Every structure is written in C-alpha cells, then in structure tokens.
Length: 267
Image 1 (spheres, helix red, strand yellow):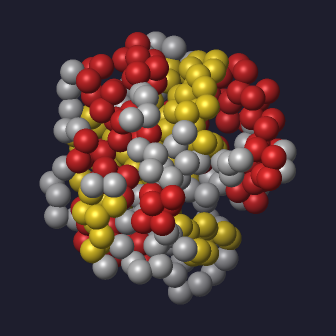
Image 2 (cartoon, one colour):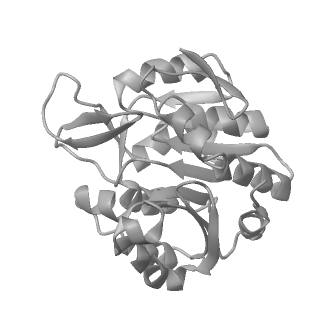
C-alpha cells in the first residue's frame, strides 16, 4: 500500500502502525531527519549515515528527503526487507545489508518475532532464521561508508549493546549516535540499559539530547548524569506519560556533532 507519511511517499504493509503514530503525534520521528540536516549543515558536506533496524526504510526516506547524503540500511526481517527494497532499493544513495547486526560474532540462531510495524529477534530456530553479521564485518563489507557520521539504531532492546560496538568500530569518525532507549525492551533482550552510558563515556562521548517517544524534547544532559535521569524509565508508565526515549549522543572531540545536537528544535 502506497502512503504519504509526514510528506514522504513510501510503500507500507497494511498493518504498519507508522501512519497512526504520525497522525496522533505530529512530531513522531521528526527528530532524526532534523538532526541529519543540522549535522550536514554544521559540517558543510553530504551526510554519511547508517540505519540499523531499517524496517521499511521510512527513516532513510525521511533523511534523504531532508538532506543530501548516503545511507547504509541494515535489516534482517525478510518481510520488511521486501518493503525496504521497494522503497529505497533503486536509489544509488542507499546500500542494503540484509542481515541481523550483532555486537559480536554469534553462533546462536536468531528468529524474528513480529508485531505491528516492528520486529524483535530472539534465540531460536525457524525457517525465517536471520543471517547475522558483526559490526566489524559490516564495516569490512561496506568500505564506502568508512566516513560514517550519523548512526540510527532501533532494534527493540539490542541498541544498548550495538551502539557502543558501532562507536568503537568507527572510532576514527566519531559518529553521532541516535537510538531508541527503552529499559523494558533492553532487559527483555537480556541487556543492562544503564551500562551503555558507562561504555559511551569511556569512548569519549559526553553530550546527550533526549526526546520522548512522541518526538517531544526533554532535555540536553552530560553522559555522566544519564543514569540518574534515566531512573524515570523505571517508574510506572502511567506516571511518566511516555514509553521510552529517543536519544542522540555526540563525542567530546566532535564540535559539529555537539552543534547539531544543540541546534535541533521542534517545528
């Protein structure tokens, strides 16, 4: 089904919830393309980005509609891969890696659990078991993206382990890191959501911008204070008015990244 969502044309399965989210929350998902524009403007050159958990390609479509650049899409679910190819497969600014990205080499098979417009991977055998690739292998396979400057990750709980791995692997370019931060999904995937802040601090990342899951800005904080601020995500959802956060993090030696984080504003 072809739809126009937030001004961008895309092909979506009938059950996909993106149009509903965008209708209820007009700011939903707009922080990422605005961040992409701010970073490209701060650097004065086309953006090199990666979309982990690319789904149908909606984030990539919005980034490339907003600014010039190239995007490496990583998606493992064959169902959404079909839509990803239909949406961006013919665009020479986009490369597609049809694999499940892991922070390390792993021999345990991973199978998709699909719900609405998203997919979570769990250990298990199935006819839809996903091919896997480590972060290091991903960089080797796609040398055209060695200049990576923006990373988006939405992998339903694996973001807190993937993001530090990507930051280590592309430490020479110090990319801005944008990811979904959800305590419940992280723990469901067997990951400690607070450890990500210690790891990013050790890698030199020092500034964090936070939005709620509807794209409304919450604040800008030092990485050192994030565990304290994130305690709200362990409170009952009925008392905090949002389900999870979107966060963007910049490196202390990345002046353009810090400038972009501070410049992003809702319209």
